[in-house]
Length: 363
Image 1 (cartoon, rainbow, N blue to C red):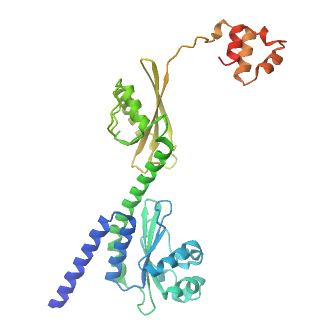
Image 2 (image 1 turned 120 degrees about the horizontal axis):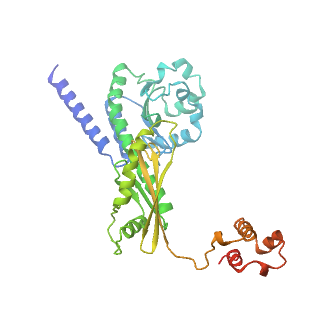
Image 3 (image 1 turned 90 degrees about the vertical axis):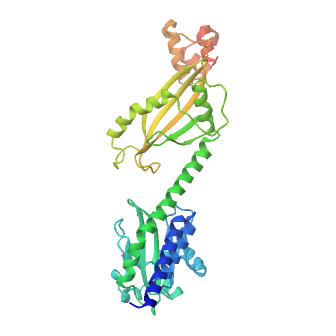
């Protein structure tokens, strides 16, 4: 091997390393896709690279390596994917990561298809290879490299390079999918829970807080007897709550929450606490894995507080007669005063005893 070959090999390795660094350091999925485009186009001849991303995971549905192909990709996503013979004939399975389409769709079949006439001829390409990114059994993204007739089909060395690139590309896409899910979780919880008077706390398996709203921070402070509300953004669980959750962890482990038939939400316990003039209620639920995309599962705690007041007009059922108990039953069923009087055969509502009448009137 001469010096020029060594220098070219050194430059190629350095360019690949720089591209992989940009891929892993990309702050957005768009930048990660662009880094992948640059790596692929720099190391093999191709007519273009296209990325199609899972809509439920990413806000960016598709991207092309060349700006002039963006409108083509948008049209493909909206309508032309119905004609994609590659998509129909290629194997779809989490273990399938690199697919050369000529292995499943002969060129003679491809050129007779509507997909070739409607899609491929627009960009002047005839050969393709796809890299599929999976997370467990969930498809996340597909990168498709296309070539013109002059560039020819993909060789074994091209497929070997794409297989070496696949773990890096999968790691970057999964990282951005996880970040997107985190943002979606927080936005959803913020929308529904931030202004709620009920406290909402989400803990991971290690009981570290993943999310809490403003009401949860205030209620946990008051639960602990701290009347001086802190202005910091932290939250501290009282020992009573933490011990209640810790006692339930072995029970949850025995339920095997990662199994497909595990319940999506399991109500575990309600914890009642009285402090001074208030009554506190904490409901603890367990969210199995994949509900919030964590490895084992998460805890959802809702906190509420109501004043403890003794009603001056409390109705003591043990002191009521059978007729008065019947009146109570009808009132609890939602009947009006007039309807209750008719049902009981009472001519006037004044014939009902004062204690029952107060209850019927909602005092």
